[in-house]
Length: 155
Image: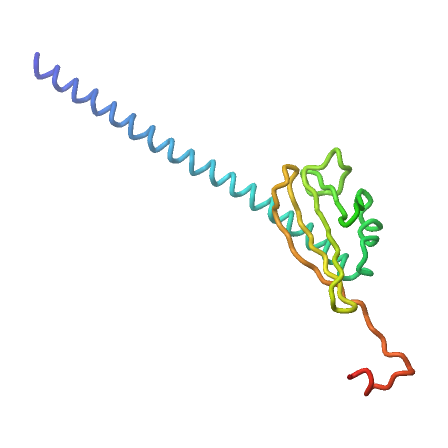
């Protein structure tokens, strides 16, 4: 009788160790999948932010280089003293302020170089966490008038 009792206890100990091992592996595996899901969402968010900022930068570079370009192109944009705000919903589509989950801030600066303007474009979440930012440049064309000779322009 004692032999069956010891075999039963060893068998129970083995089952307990197997359960413990599987629970540890389950916890590690769940953490891995949760982290992967979080990284996927962050990557998608970054991709959308980059696309939105590039679109705004393209509008600035190909437009007249003023904030009025954004007001004409984006219907729900707001022009503040030195900034322009574009409001985006959770799908990164233009929306009104109350529906916004993200926003793009555009600050246009004149530089010391004549004909050059720079715009600092930042995409942020509603909790003011910066997702992506870039700087775009706009060069105004300069034309040589007929009264100036090419030699004067080169100087």
